[in-house]
Image 1 (tube, one colour):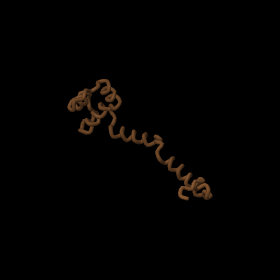
Image 2: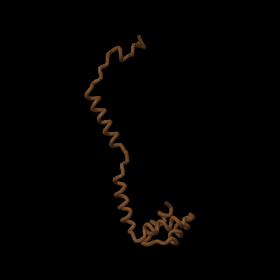
Image 3: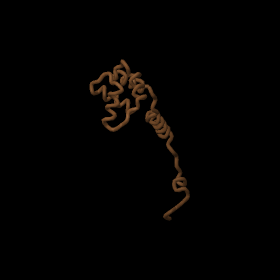
Image 4: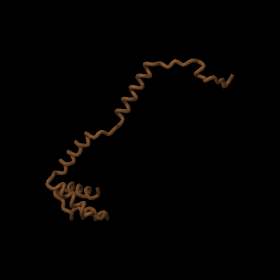
Length: 104
């Protein structure tokens, strides 16, 4: 991740095709050692590609990933609420105090 961040910082700084030396320079400026194998991998994967287009394509792919968020849970809660509203609970007097008389 740090190597990718260095690549992205180079691009944001105006260098459309950063080299491994550029990435190493960015990382060393903050006291971090660069991994040359990771730098080479990043450069080979992103060679000749526009970084903004790569990010946009990744965002589109992430939009299709199910997250299992609150929508299904909310739908289940709404169904449970509807069922509870349809069936009013009948409670007898003896059930409400469960047979205990605390004050009398």
